Length: 444
Image (cartoon, rainbow, N blue to C red; front, side):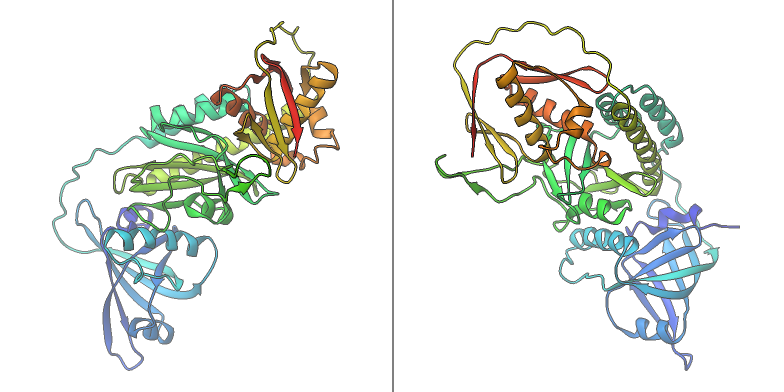
């Protein structure tokens, strides 16, 4: 007996599907739909774009037949469906909306293909249409083996930084995905910030994207994988654009947006939420310059990887911040010499500039400002995660906002900007500030 999972390749939207309906008086109607969307093993969703004869028939007579085609083999299958309801918001709607934008852009129909709703149907029966399918020309990838190998890498991660690096390396080596990034969720700011990337000329660490914006933002907001198989202007972006902020006395406008890494022509995109239970943590994002690079099987595999990643992030986070930190190793003497640098802090958004060069903002900026002040006052260099978490002057969010990720972000930004200050981990839940040049602090 055929199952919906066995014909999922037909539901990619590469070839329009034929849908047959019937009016109450018995008059048949045949039309094409942009996509038949896989919901679960017994339900699909059809795109509701126009109020036409098909829509009228469905509302009057819920029995529908859809003919779907495998884009690789041309095998055809008939789905007997029963209409249940229309959804105009939520995960299924947003996923279909994103995919439809890709189909519309690919076919030159942007502005015409507009999703009004997702019509949910129960799949009653699946029948193979007689014919002679073509042989498969593409070699199937062993994604189960890739998930297994990637899981081994993740299990070998002793801290969050290593975990992030292993996850991205696993996607490249096991899944042959050359362009990927991991973003963590900032609940207070309702945005995501990049903590790691692979395959781009610029890492984009510290770049941000708002919830609900693009593939990444929609996936995070809805808690559902978003996958696009064709290039689309509506959901593509090569950098995070933020308004410039005019800084008094600093010569005009200074840009505080870090470019979001991304391909100039991303033809396949997929964003998978990272979560622990119902707690959203971030997004795993992959892309490719090839059309239809990621299919349903890739989606299933990356959902499994993201699930393990979420569990590992939660576990490492709890272990790092729930126990007393071990004593730090002895500090290494470093000479402080050279011309003094000017470090400015803007309290409005905790943004930091080193000699007019933008570094970071938000929680990471507030942390860095505290470290510098403590160093200036007491020549202090060693700190613990716990004291940062409990410091009332920082106003940090609760533990679920992942302090460790903020410290990784700060550490990588300092390293990338070749700053005269660096931070390093000296043990579980401990860090050290290294200063190589004198500095002057200015509060704006």
